[in-house]
Length: 246
Image (cartoon, rainbow, N blue to C red; front, side):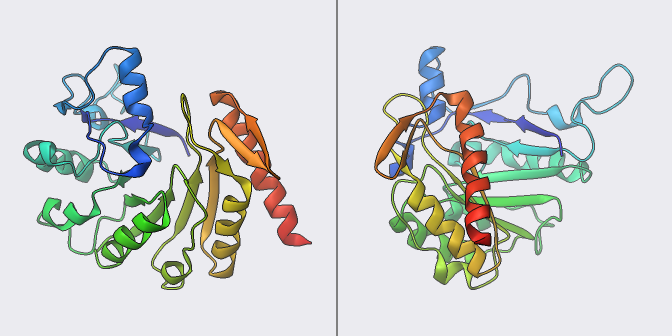
């Protein structure tokens, strides 16, 4: 599946321990942009509907569209624009929209009128970086209506237990990632292994997509370049799969 991004608006506010070293703030600082000002995109708002000269959608059918990853789809400042974004999403039922949020408490107030039990092609992910945020956000998430629900433990900041939530069979996937760039906090392999074992127990899909810049294995901390974070995470996943078969 081809993956791409659509950021109909940009900018966010730090609201959680996981936001401390947010990659959006880091990159905006590099390019001298003000992250705390939420602005509607002038160039990309209608990206999913744009076509090339041959009349084909620039975002190909079957793609996974990471939606609003430089903001939060449910942030308050976007209330005036979100209805139009939902209309665009409705028109592209041939692609999957992945919406990740830390503001799940605003979910029900931000839905289109025809949402009902959710859209088949919209996947909602809630980010929970530690046990406190897991216990705060996932009970809310359990009670909202969506066809597809993911948990993102990203950036993972400590060992966490997802058992009471995964045993509900409400979640399709748990995805884990470490923290990147300057001042990144450590990601321990043992934390990742623990989540993988919990997912296996309750037959929930698991992925470890990024080690972060500081990856600790057996008390040794490895400093990993951003490009290699994905490669090393894949190797760690392969190791966990082999470990499971023993």
